[in-house]
Length: 387
Image (cartoon, rainbow, N blue to C red):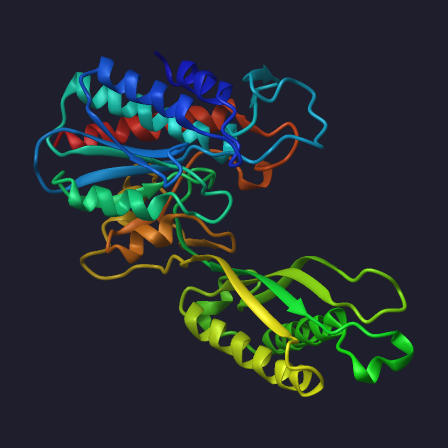
């Protein structure tokens, strides 16, 4: 099968994060087995999803792991020109859900695995395919843990194939998210001093987030921060709901709150700042009624990717050699599984075909030129691993 054939098959699986990805994993496992490559599944707690990893080549140092995710975002509510679950070529572009983010890379990585098995390699080539990246990067950590315990040779470099126009991305922000539930005490709004409005107390915390953002944006960034856009950690509320009627203090309010954390900063420190602010607001609420207060439900904590240096930094030099990109390392503000690999002490870099600007949109696409650039990258990687 060509990379294009594999891409068309992968896109046909409707692996939105709310659904199972097992049909895709079944197919990938079978495709690898046909080429003499044994794969290991890492199921989630429900048994409805699984990650998968495999290795080709000898038990030797210096290997490379190609990392991708199998889940995609939904298409409901989007206006597509073509069937999102079929790859369609138009005007030099390949359209379909996940073509850019990131089944295009997955297809190229699988093709490279097949080629490595056929041609032979002196150093191992590995693949890791996860689930639930789009909703919090939940699938990669158990896969990384299982990979470490598998006895397979440890990769010297990990290439996470998020769309980067085949340019090395050496850093990204982390993402720390919460569902915050506020419990008030309802009274008639004419006597609001005797009650606690969950909405108005939530507004205090949201106001604090705005104040922190204003302070963050006003300060002069250090050189290592200035390469990010924006050059600071940011706080954000994306959804809120609460209240029953207009003349009763709201008994309930909840909202989604997240931090985009600079990789040189601690997510734990930002959580502590949030908890301290919540405690301050909550003290005033409980002075009116003891049952009022906040509950923080942490949804995800995705670590950032920090630029690497020193002799153990193998991933970036490898990708630069394969792409010929010698300019400054790029950094991005979106999160990925790259920081999770780095936290597990893998030298890690992001490099993949396509443009992140096309991800998640209706008529998601990758140019054929970018897909071919990804194939040439894999060819050069295979040549490198034969040495």
